[in-house]
Amino acid sequence: MALQASFLPSALSPHKEGKVGGGIKDSAFLGTSLSDHVKSDLNCSLLRCGKRLNASVGVRAQTAAAAAAATASPAIERATPEGKKTLRKGNVVITGASSGLGLATAKALGETGKWNVVMACRDFLKAERAAKAAGMSEGSYKIMHLDLASLESVRQFVGNFRLSGMPLDVLVCNAAVYLPTAREPTYTADGFEMSVGINHLGHFLLARELLEDLKASDYPSTRLIIVGSITGNTNTLAGNVPPKANLGDMRGLAAGLNGVKGSTMIDGGEFDGAKAYKDSKVCNMLMMQEFHRRYHEETGITFASLYPGCIATTGLFREHIPLFRLLFPPFQKYITKGFVSEDEAGKRLAQVVSDPSLTKSGVYWSWNKNSASFENQLSEEASDPEKARRVWEISEKLVGLV
Ligand code: LMG
Ligand code: NDP
Ligand code: PMR
Image 1 (cartoon, rainbow, N blue to C red):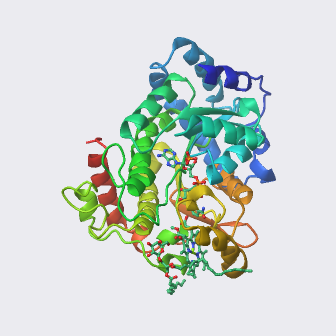
Image 2: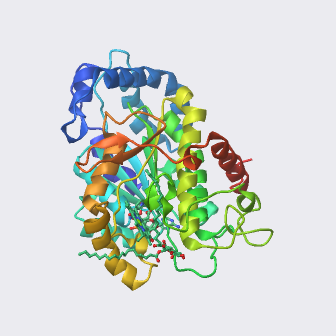
Image 3: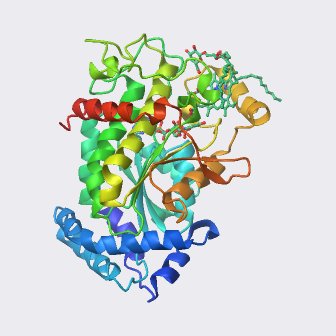
């Protein structure tokens, strides 16, 4: 409820009347104005909102009455075909926002004054300190506990988020671990190998559960974003540095990734932490496409993944040997020139969350040297529809959805 108290003033702030076009233009991010194409997309979204209202009220009914009253009535106003101006801030959940890319994105979105950021983190205190140290303003964020290494925690997070009464407009699946030096596998609470368990399976359950909430949102553009990576794409030089990603026939995944009945690796091979991470990123990119195929048309939700650039200074490399951590940033800065700062990467992800020109669904975004976004090509494996379907179907069994 504290969440609500801190976010309500902006949610209920008075609105100006205006045409849809004007309103949308005002909400453009980073000064980007709208193309006609996007305007018409957004108009469609607004109309769709009307259709979604019943569902919205259904979800809201699970929450406290006061919360429902606070959020439902402006939603009705927004849904009018005349197209009233957006009244409230957007609500975005970012997993793993206690450091690196997630934190930088939370800060970038919070600073626009247009977003309430829910930082979904496993370490509450660390997240609070990180938000303060980054200079995030008090009213712009709320920390909620989420440990992706436990499916129970994922379900609890979903329940707590719903109790808060906030609509969900954008979900960003960003958290990850990278365990390149581990000799033996470690496991999540549910017995899955840790990297795939956290990076893919935890997010898969979270995204599947929160899809209902995204569907119920009346926000003009709803999005589900998953952070992918170049290292999972074998059509690039970086993706060819061994060990390479490869899901094989997924026999290890199908057997539960627990090392009891089968392997801890998706492809059934020997444990390799660096490969497990890259495989998990392939799953992330496949998952986004499968969501797109199954739900984009019906829901209008934008499903996208991205490679934000090589953010060589983040906590992702905390488990790597000290020499690597020392040399990796200059290597990326001066040799590959793939380096990007945490701030810059945060702005990129923030664009994918809120820029009206990045509403296309089913896209894997990357940025060129001038920091301009473009639709990138995924590797053959990371864009294989049959693999996407199999990852989806096996994963829903593993996380108990079927
Ligand atoms: C693995 O080793 C381990 O097996 C695994 O357990 C895990 O730890 C994993 O990724 C972590 O590493 C892989 C091995 C790769 O990595 C290394 O040991 C290399 C360490 C190098 C560290 C890199 C950063 C430091 C670089 C130092 C440079 C000094 C910079 C100083 C800068 C100062 C500037 C002032 O093995 C290799 O490295 C072998 C090299 C493999 C190169 C792969 C290239 C393949 C190219 C294939 C081409 C394919 C073509 C694709 C075409 C695409 C076209 C679009
Ligand atoms: P960081 O390690 O800085 O951030 C990862 C975040 O994930 C941290 O906040 C961490 O929490 C959180 N996290 C880890 N495990 C869990 C868990 N079980 N439950 C909840 N949260 C968890 O790394 P980056 O910022 O670099 O990584 C962010 C994303 O960017 C990842 O998806 C990564 O794959 C991707 N990426 C990164 C690249 C890079 O060059 N750095 C390149 C391409 C993609 P805590 O703070 O508590 O440890
Ligand atoms: Mg890689 C050519 C460009 C390029 C880019 C953009 C990256 C990104 N890397 C590139 C090249 C190379 N790397 C080359 C030529 C080598 C051999 C020296 C190399 C090595 C290397 C290692 C050992 N690179 C790495 C590692 C890691 O441990 C990182 C990793 O694979 O984590 C899974 C990594 C990365 N290189 C990148 C990026 C973005 C990473 C971070 C991984 C990620 O988040 O996906």
